[in-house]
Amino acid sequence: MRHIVLFLMVFLLLGGCSANDDWVHTFTGESDNWIVVMEIRPIENEHTTVVYPFYLTKKMDSEVTKLYYQAHLVNGKPSGNIEHIDFEEFNQKQPVLLFREYPNLLSPDFPAKDTPNEQLEYYFSELKMDIKWTDDRGEHQEQIPLKLQKVP
Image (cartoon, rainbow, N blue to C red; front, top):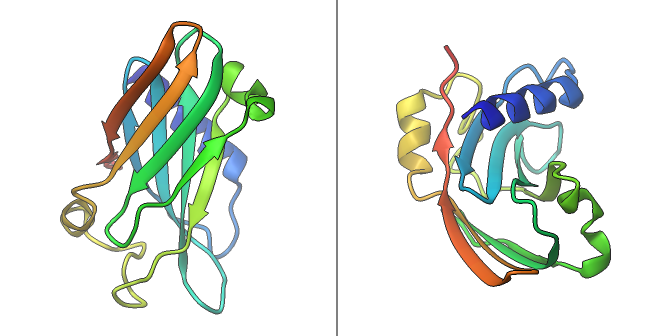
């Protein structure tokens, strides 16, 4: 839990703020090996009002040499591979932006700054990340569920 709090603080400080960027909804999941963070963040774009960036941080000490990830969203399953040359940030245990998903919104007002937590939790109740990787111990896979981090 301490890792998640520290991770979120770093992203909030590094993320900066603009007039349109005064809120964020954050979903997190953690295993012994990984921390996954998905944010719902406002953007100024003619096609959408929010973006869902996904971040991944390695917690284990072994060196990752191959990585595949797939997010389970309501409207799709974005996925990708990380090649060997791109592992420097992962192996230094730095948060890495995997992708930014531009959702097909139910309405222009969802999700928004004042969307109730209950509605967010219901809509994103099946949110999870599949991770498959190879390191010096062999091949591994995990599925990490993400839950809404409630702001006091």
